[in-house]
Amino acid sequence: MLLLGVSATATLMLTGVLSGDDEEVTVAEGDASGKAEKSKTEKKHKAKAPLNYVPLDPPFVVNFTDDTDIRFLQITVEVGTREADSVDKIKEHRPAIRNALVMLFSSQDPLTLNTREGKEKLRADTLSEIQNVLQEETGDGVVESVFFTSFVMQ
Image (cartoon, rainbow, N blue to C red; front, side, top):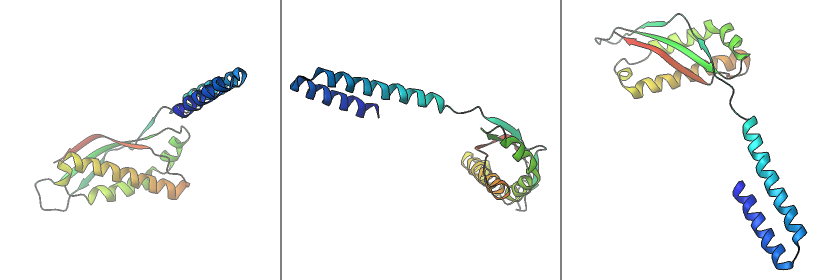
C-alpha cells in the first residue's frame, strides 16, 4: 500500500516537474503522506486484544481401548479467546464442551499421541470440537486457541 503511494507521488512529482505545476505536486505529496499516517493509525487500532485463558477443569482422564502398554491419558486443557464476554459463554457451555472432548480424547491412538505431530493434530482437533460446540450453542465459535498445560499417558 505504501509502495503504491510512493509510486503515485513520484509519478505526480515527475509530471508536475515536467509541466511546471508545483502546486499540484505539493497536494499529491500531502495526500500520500496522509494515507501513510492513516495506515499506521489503523494498524495501531487493529492491535489484538489480550488473550483470556479459560481452564476446562478438572483435567480430562480417558482410558484407551487398544491393547497397548499405554492404558490411559490425562490432559489439562485451557482455551483462549480475545473477547472478554466470551469467557462466560465458554463457562456456560463447559459440560457440552467437556462431553465432546471426552469423546475425542478416548478415540485417539496412543501410539500416534507419542509424537509431537500427533499431539499437534489432537490440539487442532480439540480446537475444532470446541468451536463446533460453541457455534452450535451460541452461534459463534469464540475460541481462538487451545493449550495442553499437562499431558500424561501411562
